[in-house]
Length: 231
Ligand SMILES: [Zn+2]
Ligand SMILES: [Zn+2]
Image 1 (tube, rainbow, N blue to C red):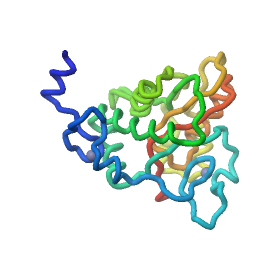
Image 2: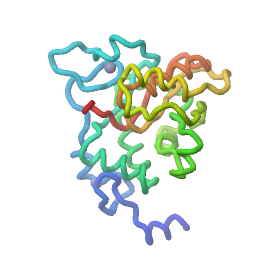
Image 3: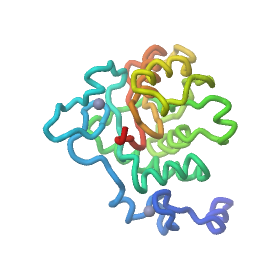
Image 4: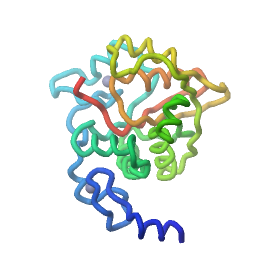
């Protein structure tokens, strides 16, 4: 009842174009077909688009050890996808629903799809969480959890400090993450699906995957809404 009332006052909007949604789907029909999806040849491990003539594993995955089996990434961080993620991070936590819908579609329809025991997410430090009021990766994870019907559990910890990842080179990022992210308990097993909002060099999610493996998971997959391809 309350939800219906809220929908009347604040009708749900498509996170990608801002149009009021007509049906129950959290993304409008037009955006479903016109988003900047990753198309064509992509790295078998991280899903990054690669040249048609290049190796099936991208340079980054060939030269750095990866601790995850595969990354499900549907979108490229540009155009309407970029608008939606910036909207989610700044003012519209409910955009997570539509973003998770596109992510779930990618996971379910991939030939890498497998059964996951648990969904978890890349954590935020307390200060960032306090300033923003929520962790956008957690919101996407919780929506994905509802769609896939797999429990969502916080597993990792992040402390403030370290340098902002976007100011660092790929090698510096790999060192920097070691100072910020920590494992919690070691009593897990099975397959984890680790959720984040944006994949840049993969340093953060790969390190978090390494921690999850240490915590007992035998396999870790990544589900990340979009990838930056411009740096
Ligand atoms: Zn739309
Ligand atoms: Zn790769």
